[in-house]
Structure formats: structure tokens, C-alpha cells
Image 1 (cartoon, rainbow, N blue to C red):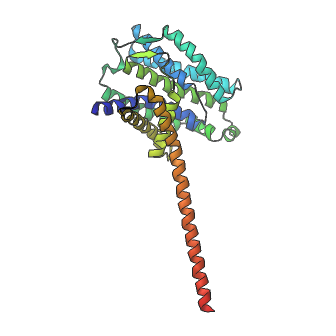
Image 2 (image 1 turned 60 degrees about the horizontal axis):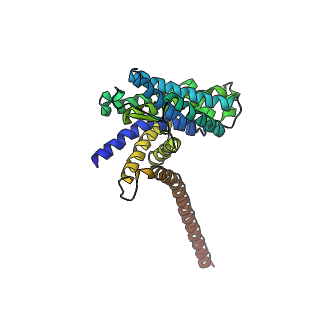
Image 3 (image 1 turned 90 degrees about the horizontal axis):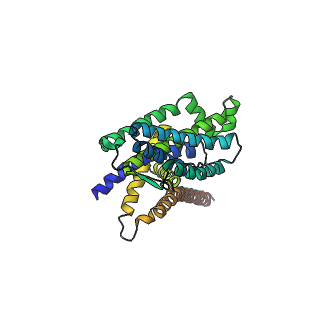
Length: 305
């Protein structure tokens, strides 16, 4: 039980980098980017191939990050310069990346269990520290002029264009950075699990959305710093829930995608249903107060007569 709990926390922190990338596109840019399912595998594939060829694992992870940046840039260019719908741009790039990733791997999967990885250092020191540094850098960036332009583009791109900002550039940078974080997560997950697989990225967008939605629902999102921390914690909570769900006897590992979908549905429906219930309760309370006031006025009028 304890080992499953600790393993879930470790995985949650690694997937948190991917969730932060999804947060940039989904929340900040309001861009439905499905490139994630492909760029996650791209990062893992590049890292695995480079590590098996003797490259430093940190350099291989950086190369994986850059591969994700390149994939995101292509999606951004398709949308901004090619004038293709954002959702379709992501789908097209995701499909293209499947073949590209298989070319990078050269075969369905690559094992790196006997190779040196970044996790030669104690993972319980490395992973939290690395995620903390990424959080700091990301929040610093989002408070720079470029970061503020990125946030403004997602809120109201017409307004930011009226101030002379190039929204095409900010969108390309935002989608590139997001997919870079996703690919970096894929590179680290590959080194943690000991292998890279051509289909390892399937469903990553749903997992990322689950982490974002769960984090915001439980911990709130008053500002950008609070929101990014909530996303990281949401990723950890999601992994813990999945770990405990898979311990149920009648559930198998193959049910993971179904569990993920149910968690996302619940996380999206529950806050809305909760708000609707509160609004109904407030409406009933106001109606009761109004009726009581009318009865009181009516009784006062009768006594006066």
C-alpha cells in the first residue's frame, strides 16, 4: 500500500510537467491542442534513442524538450500562418508525429533499463526539486512582458492586437513551450519506466486535462502562481486516485483509460452541479424571506385596520 502511494506521488510529479504544458494551452491560450498525444512520445523517443547511443541523459532530456518545442511550433504555424482551425491543427500534427516517432525509434519500443539515466540520483530529491525549479521558471516567464502578452492573447486577442502585439507570435511561442514541457515529461517518464514505446502518448491530453481540472476544483486558481501549483497538486491527486482505483479487485490495468475518463467527467460535472445547487438554495432562501416579509406586512396592515 505504502509503495503504491509513494509511486503514485512520484509519477504524479513527473506527469505534472505535462499537465503544466496542457495548462498553458487549455487555460492560458484557450487553445484546444491535441499535439500533446504525439509530442509526449516524441520526448520519450528522442531521450531513449540518445541514451542508448551513449549521450548524457540530461542532454537527452533537453533534446526531448526541444523536439516537443519543434512539434508545438509546427502546430502553431499551421494554425496562425496556415489559417487551419486550432483543433484540426493539433489533430494533424498528432497524426504526423505518430509516423515521425516511429522513425525516431526505428522499432515499436526501446528498452533503456541497463542505461544511465537522470534517476541515478535519488529520485525523491531530484523529482521534487526539478518540478519546483520548472514551476519557478514558468511563473517568472508568465510575469515577463512576453508572458503577460501570452496571457492577454488567451483572454482577448483582439484587445492585445490593438496594443500592437503580434498574437500569431505569442500563440506559436505558447504552443511551443507547452509541447516542450509535455515532451520533457515524456523524456523523464521514459527514463523512470525504463522504456519508450510508440503508443505511450495515447490519452495524455485527457490525463493532462484531468490534472488541470482536479487541481482547480480542489485547490482553486485565484491567480497564475496559485493555478500552476494547483495543477501540480492536481496531477499528484489524480495519480493517487488512479493507484487506489486499480487496487480494486474487479478493475484491471486495462481499465486505466476508463478510470481517467470517469475522473475527468466527475471533476467537470461536480463543480457545476455544486454551484447550481447553491444557487437553488440561495433562490429558495430569498423566496422564503420575501414570503415572510409579505406575510409580516399583510399582518401589520390587518392590525392597523
